Amino acid sequence: MTQSPLHILTSLALKDSRLICGVMSGTSVDAVDVAIVRVRGGGLGTTLELVQYTETLFPEEVQQLVFSNSDVSSSNVYDICLLHAALAHTYAEAVRQACEEAGIEVRTLDLVGVHGQTMHHIPEPAQVGRHLVRSTLQIGSGPTMAALLGVPVLTDFRAADMAVGGQGAPLVPYADYLLFRSPDEHRLLLNIGGISNLTWLPADCAADDVAAFDSGPGNMVVDALARQFFGKEFDEGGAIARTGRVNPDLLSWMLGHPYFRRTPPKSTGRETFGSEFVGTYLQIARDLEIETPADLIATAAECTVRTASAAISQLTQGCSGYSLYVGGGGAKNLFFTEGLRFSLPNAQLKPFDVCGIPADAKEAVCFAVLANEWLHGNPTNLPRVTGASKRVILGSLSIA
Image (tube, rainbow, N blue to C red; front, side, top):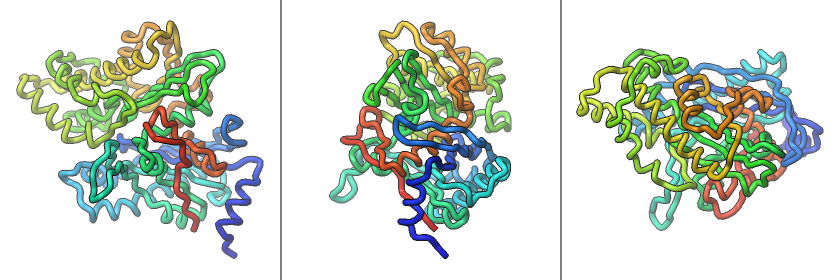
């Protein structure tokens, strides 16, 4: 007999621990990250154990549809409508694979928290009719996933923050605060995905002390150039960038982008540093007679290093020493990590695993935590970070 939503949620709330799956696919559109965690408690009393982390590559056809439909000039509503369902199937398959590798049945999961695939992000207010609105679109149908998996699914984590004046991003800093704060160590968490984002956790911090924002492109521009010139999904280890020479004029053009002059709260994505930006970048390079692909990649990589370093220096101003934990795909790029080490003499670079969670799994774990917080009724946005007028509960539940 089908259980009522009231019975399902009551049962979950009364459990001593919950098996929660976090699902993340970022702006790089390279893979679906799935983390299965055993969570106990909530809020500052949250503890967890990572049961399984699985990375599932995106089907190439789906990846290309996401890329083309994330660009206003090439998107169409037919493709986006199909992708909304297709991504739900893709995510469900990734969850099943993670459960199989963990040796557990899908039905033993208590809850799934899914970020969804960002198609477009509009953090600044725009007038539509009588209303001034901010909006963001993460697709991957929650009801479809819930029906496919037979498990409650939480999606659409950003909308409520935007409804109260926030940018809907970044959201991970709340989970960073719960999981990675330290009583005696100043910590800067840098995630280099398609976009680079960072979280500042001063020693013994309260939630209101947390600062975070997107610093700019992470792997996004480098990945696009690696695909175009070398037929590779990314510059593995930063090997290509390390053979190139940074062009100061092209770098100056990149660093002149208005986003870098904006003050937080701020967030960005593919709509700012995606295909249109890359096209202009290549045109500027042609005007400057830069023809060597490795130089183009080195210059784009240097932009990532410079903008992340500047943002970190801004957040840690006045701090004589702190630990820098680098995660995301860019953590494996030696051009990035060596550049950060050189640019930030007060930072002690540490592997993210020191925090107890593998770097690759971190964001998926965070969405499992955000799902758990929804269940506890805890607001998970940080107004200082997003610019929201108040704290709100984030996420929408689907039960099949």
